Figure 1 (cartoon, rainbow, N blue to C red):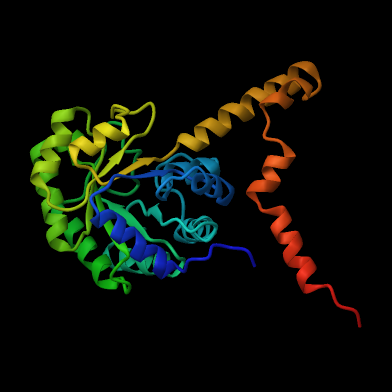
Figure 2 (figure 1 turned 60 degrees about the vertical axis):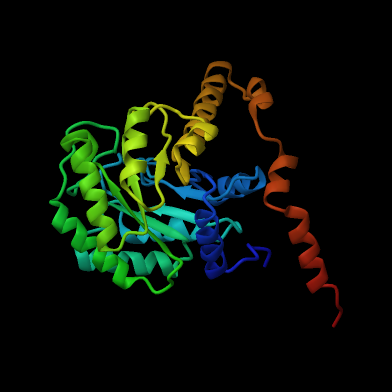
Length: 297
């Protein structure tokens, strides 16, 4: 069929090469395969699959209620839709070190290019909320070591996220990040940084690729691509941006339908049938079908 042309291994190799180049990779969140197709069409570098967005799409709060099968299935559906590498949020790894190891293998088998594990105590909280509780750094290092040992493709990116800055301070967050790198993390996700000096401090202290989380309505300023390049960051994610844009439009359209009894006034806000068919490559599938079934018995 007309799915992505690149294999999972090819996507991972390309992802690693892009990170190693030193360029900033912009990876908007995609909560569905169709959104991922749009992300690729618009020329972005990769796709991020957010645990918060996945939870919200299931009408659940972001407190670790999703399961490994749910996350793996949605990750597979999204990753297979494009030739872009996809990085997925694995929350706390769905358990202790052995669980985290299995989770990484499941995600690797599903075709993802990488994942991140976080050091919160389960049930976790959204990274931009207060009163988060973290597991001891040694316990998290064990989890990272188990996950690193479990992965089979060396190009699969294992990232460690630390939420320590908000509850333990910058020094502790940096110490944790270094310990996670020593345990086998390929990259670090310092969550909920609030100032430019904090970004600079992490970059100066940690010698692996760093991720910047540009989520709206949180603690982190919405830095520009050029500013992140100046700061030396490697990946920028926009985890819930597309979901928020979509849900704003859905709510607005439903209000019009409810108030006026017809969706007519909402039509100018809608994606057209023609545009949808372009994204799902309707004509390409039609030609594919005709080329197969053009014979007579």
